[in-house]
Image (cartoon, rainbow, N blue to C red):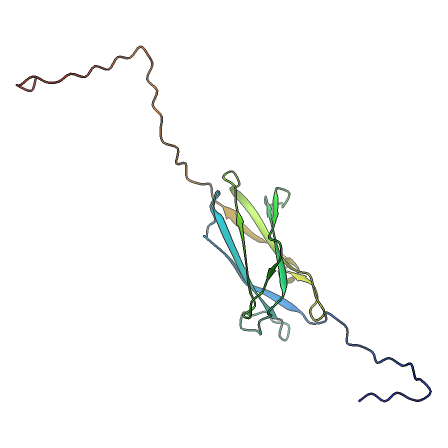
Length: 167
């Protein structure tokens, strides 16, 4: 119970600062692995509490938190980009998002997962946590175009039926 002295009737107790707790991004992965151009790729990860300065998938999970995954083409992150929109973690702290890479979007990509902060946890990205982006390569789709053979009009192909003797 807070004691308010009579001489200070308008004293307001100091509230605990919002967003002081730290969270961790763990178990970030994607399927299929490796991703292939022209396919839908599912990304998943987990949010947990940081415990004694340690991030581990065995730490307490954080449910109901909104995250956004930002994926950018090129090793320098200057190419085309895609944002997942908001995904919400489930009771196990797991989130899932998907992106479809166009047929011509093979090459190097990088991923950064963001949590924007709320009343209990400070904002943090996977880059903030580790100091680096998550790099991955999208492989080119297999060429499934059937071969086309074009014969010049001067070539003549003659088929004949052999006689009874096979000649």
